Structure formats: C-alpha cells, structure tokens
Length: 409
Image (cartoon, rainbow, N blue to C red; front, top):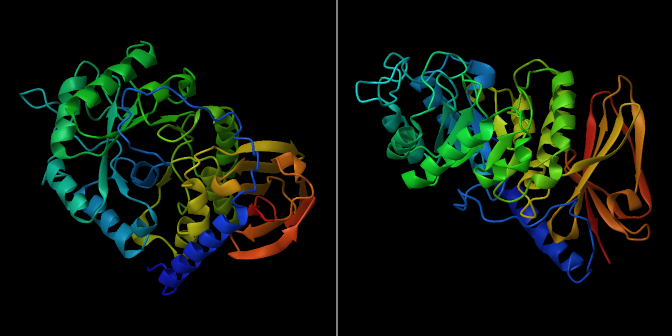
C-alpha cells in the first residue's frame, strides 16, 4: 500500500520548484486580498498547536462504535506503511464508545475493558512510539452522544487531568445531553481545565454550529464544527461546504473552521466526487481527518488522500481559508490566496453534465495583464506558462479542476 517509489524524487522536485517560485515572485509586491483574514487576540489555549489545520484519522465515519485497540493500532500502523503519516496525517483519534459506561470508584473515566484491555495510556504509548499522536473523544454534557459512556459536564478538571496523564494530544468535545444549557460557558470551562492540566492538547469544539462558534470558539480552542454531521453523499458535502464557507474570515493559524471529517474512501461517492470533496476541504483549510478504514484503503483512495500538492494548499502557512467567489447553474469558482503571492482556484461542477467553467484574473485579485504559471494539482503538471486575462476548463459532472496560479515577471 506504499505511496510509490518515486516519492523522494517527487518531494525533491517540489522543493526545487518552491525555490524557483520564491525567486520569481520576490519583489512583485502583489496586493492579494486575504478575504478578511485578520489578527486576533491571544486565546486561552494559545499553545502553538494547529498553526496549520490538523491532519490525521478519526474512527467515527467508518467504525462508529465498533472500535477496539486492535483497530486503532492497525490504523496507526497503516498510516505509517501507506506513507500517509509522512505527508502529515499524524493524529489517530478515537471517537465515541471507547470508555466504560460509568466512572470508576474514584470518579475517573476508564477505557472499556472488553475493547481496550491494555488501557488508553498503553495505547497512547504505542501510537507515540510510531511518531504519531493520539486523540480522544468527550462530551460537554452528562453523557456522550452514543449514551454509552459518561460526559465531562461537572468533571472537566478531573477529565482534563486524566487525558494529560494518559498522554492525549487531541480532544473532540461533543455537545449531547447538555441539559439545555448554553454551549459557550461549557466549552470555556473545559478549555480552562485543559490549560490547567499542563499538556498541549488540541481542543476541537463540536457543538455543530448551533451558536455560531466561529464568532467565539477561537478564544477557547483550535477548531470548531460549523455544521451538523457529514454523511457519505454528494448532497451532504455540497451543503456542508456552503455552510462552512460563510465563516471563512474567522479562520487562521491556530484556529480553524471544521466542516466535519472526510468521507473519502467509504464507498458512497464516485472517484470524481471524492476528489471534489478533498479539494474543497483543502481549499477551505479544513482539518483533514481521514474517515475510512486506512488499513484496507484502495489505491484510488490513497491517491486522493495522498495528493501532496492538494495537501500543500491545505497546509499553506498563510492560513487563509479559500471562498466561493461565483456560482451559477451548479458551476462554481472557489479561490483563495496562498503564501508567496500565489493563488489557488477550484472550478467545481455540481451539475449533472460536462460543462465549461471560466474565470477571469480580476475575479481572483490579479491584474488582467499579469502572466501566471498555472499548475494542475490533480494532473501534477503545468498547463500554462504565461497565462493572462482568463482561463476556461471543461469539468465533468460533480468533478472539479484545481489549480495553483503563480504570478511571474
């Protein structure tokens, strides 16, 4: 299941290309809009984590409650053997159903004995030994969403301390059984508890966009869900992309909008639909959390998840979420600025037939006379070398084209 024998050569090529790009764009003084990206005050968990969107895997979309330590270890092993870990997929995240149904006699959460007999600390040690990070799931209510294990409401400091002692690196914090109370104070309480626990832990707030968390969650955590749950259908990813798009200006290094985990490889969509899903999530600077069974992933699935050029857009240090800039009749243009004066453009055809999609330089913040190199991130090649004014591509139904434009002198 390797990523290909040419990986090292390809990485060297990309590195040399980037050096060339720096030379070409240096001194251009391009004034490309950051689409409202702005400096924000220091926040409670400003601990240096998630300066780019987190990448990894989460158990829920494929396994739901059917998880155990063997599945988690096999997934960690597969991230290494496929080469995905080398591309940045570092977090191995347990979702719901990992704990016993009740706390122990000391009031602590404990791993479920029948599925995690070695304990969560032992699992964390296994994952860490491979150079990966372990994530876990909790809830800002009395019970988790499965109703199979306790939530952390009223136990925040105790649970944060437990997670830190186990060596947890990431917590997804859900919002079920919350007794009808406001979301923000409950998430602030856990944020303070995590800070007090003393271990750098990525805090993922999962209140499904109920109270517009993009406007406040950056004060308490690193990523926040902007929508309800995703499912493995094309209508789901289009709807979620549109909902997440609204909050683009609130994202930036250390704090990201989260449109939910990836469905790539779970079988409900076509190859082209999965490419569109991955492309738009990357452009939106969404966390890239694999939701399929990595150990049995097909070469086709790995080719999508392992597209190093699309990943580079997601991990770009400028950290500006791309946006939808034009749409009509199911034909859409999404774009955003990248570091070193570059731009990313996705032409997305949501319609049911093959159609041309065009965009002009002015629409994406370029002067019409500015020549650009145009790189196709799915073909892995340059498709134009001194393109000016505008560009048109024929895009298949539910498919996309993804380009990086590099202004040149």
